[in-house]
Length: 367
Image (cartoon, one colour):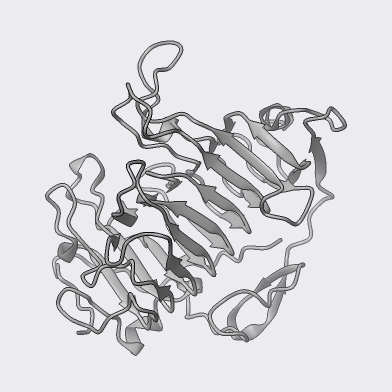
């Protein structure tokens, strides 16, 4: 069946900009290093900027700092231009926070390999804090990015909290959290179990646009979640079993504010070594039981393995997914299915307004 508004009392926003027509399909693979491939297949050069400062991080002491956080601390507040933090290969066991006062940071590996640099820690929501209390879900993040205009490339973000460990009930454990606008995550990996990748915004009334490209995102329960307006393009969504060996979970848990765009999964694949028909594509997260939210997840032009349930959306905490915005379009694979009341599909006309450029709203990610 075609997707139709299920709550006519809400006004749907018009597309932010025209649909994206790319020379190589719907992806951005043909983008030149100097800019972003936009409408009509034209190359748009990035706006010239002053030469970026570079800070080098190396565990062996051959750089400017031996930890990533120390490099972040060295960036001046309210820096007006790009600062590159180049991290040499190694495993960095630390938590990293990039505050809102430090925009324009480019956190990159010194190599082009996605697995050469790993930033990892093991806090969970229920992990006790040194000063009392617990971290909570957002506070559990290995890397937390609250600044605008942030880019991460060729890195692995990991939360290796052991869910089988006793004594901690709240097992949500975030590998990477973003809360800014105009965020680029290119050729990164986000690895965890429950609540791996939190794509958020600074507040409910603010837009947090995130462009994820060529990523590896791994987890089992609500492992892509939050209220950001996020594109997940050409990425591998990997389903993993729970700590007790069981299969079952949810890919996405959007918490989108009304009138804003949620998650757009496009040109990707969803698979993993889990049982057949054991995972949902998503469910609506009404954070704080906020009934004004209008969660949205669109999965299109994506290959779905048999791990996906034949009814891929489900309710959450008393909120029905059918009252929110969930749909598919031209998915393939054993986990795909025909339109039905339990499996809404966009029409071709509707899909024209659910392209990458519509989500990014005039922002063109650049190198």
